[in-house]
Image 1 (tube, one colour):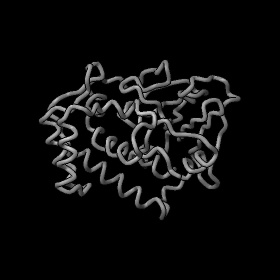
Image 2 (cartoon, rainbow, N blue to C red):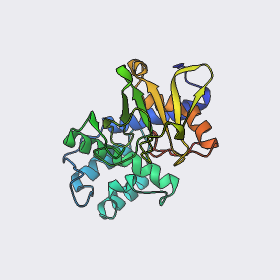
Image 3 (tube, rainbow, N blue to C red):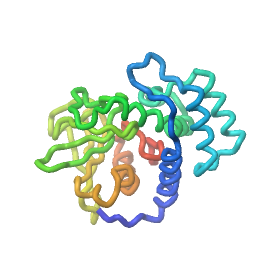
Length: 239
């Protein structure tokens, strides 16, 4: 796969870098766990996240104030991100994704469940369905959770969304001139997952590969297939 950034992807890549810088600047005081009954944002961590939003992401003081008020009300459960099913507007979903990432990463670090088998095809930490995977040595397939960053294994051939193990349900799409990546489209549930050769992460993170391979998303979605988890800037739909 060419590492050259297509001109029409520059804006997306720039936003990803800002989000990454925002996350790197957030140091939460508390740890978060999926075992909690309510996943609210604690007061001190709300202040930390709100302050960071005014940095690389250029949120205004008014916008930050509204976000702090929404988080402090206790009405927002950041786990809503993995169970939304299209209830939120795209803008609200994207914002929730951005502000929730530090909390999901805290959850992932607390659980420490990397490289485990995902029996139901869902992330073992946050429950999100994967949209990215890597083909490793000996043809093992490792999935990456784009919500919390957890990594785990599922069937080499099959769909983690509907759990079909029938090879005939899966169709493969590629891009001419782009090696090392493909889209696995499931005819049974109309979802897809992008797959990369593991050697590609020597040059780029899997999140950045997700950005570089947006043309695959566009082709898959033009054919009527859907992502089950957001990309690194919080988008599900590319059309």
